[in-house]
Image (tube, rainbow, N blue to C red; front, side, top):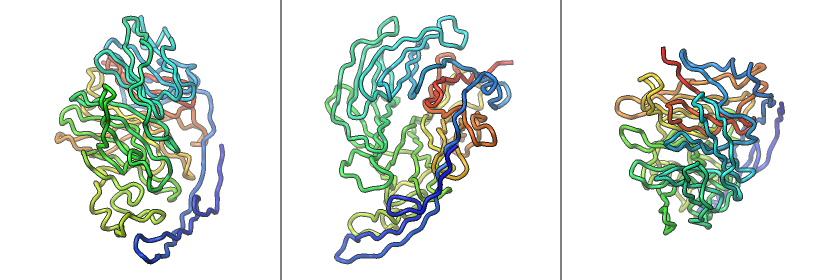
Length: 397
């Protein structure tokens, strides 16, 4: 456990800010925030601890695989083969459950290059995103991959958020999320803090939406086709700010970062361009659909459309909350269900799987990260702190 409280200057917790206005005068800005660092102690994910995880009646959580060091993003092929990335080692590993008992019994590294992270499968090909590179490989009959072919080598520099993620839209368009280089700043590269549309032949890409600080998990509602994503809030604005934002992501939309957040609140550290007031800038941005507890760190998101879970889970989203570090009391460290109404709009959050925080929330044995729906209708969830992939299955009665 690590608990720390600071008195800070410009980049820290208690902040006095003086910002130059965009006109020929200067405006004094002063703002103070009280922030904290608290990282729950990491403990082993023993079978006994896994057994005490809490889920709705009828659900069971088991280990699909373990001893994987730092598994991050997941992708599942139509035949049930599972691919998992390890950003630190730059690897992609194939996991197979050949006897269909809900646990991987074959493990094989199938690719390696620096900083491999985001994964997506389309038409028998695996697409893999690194920091500045996007690769593609053919999936062979045995699950192995052909040599990686580089499609792009000029994605923006990483900075604070190097975790590029990928997903295919229902129409086959590839989307790539590029986080910000910083906590809050005016980016020089206009592809940072965006969601990009990418041509899979390597011929180019365009900015689909901007003002997204770090939207790692995103996907399309199975019935309406609307795109939703969970954006990370700014740090060092206090324990209860900035909330995580669930956005409907629209083409050409500006989602406010770094100048405004939530329902148009001002971030006094960064003034809007062109002499605009915060109110003027906020009026041009798209507001979030829902807000979630600050610093929970949503990473993976998948819309459920399988046949194993009860009917009421159809078209709802399951989100991995990786867990906070920038608040006094931890938030996250759980799976959360986002309930969507019949019109395809998000209505509320509810806990789905909890219990990775233990010992009075002073320790954790799971920082849930990537998420994917398996071919059998279960949900697979990676834990990049403890080397486990969990399987969440519903036992039909």
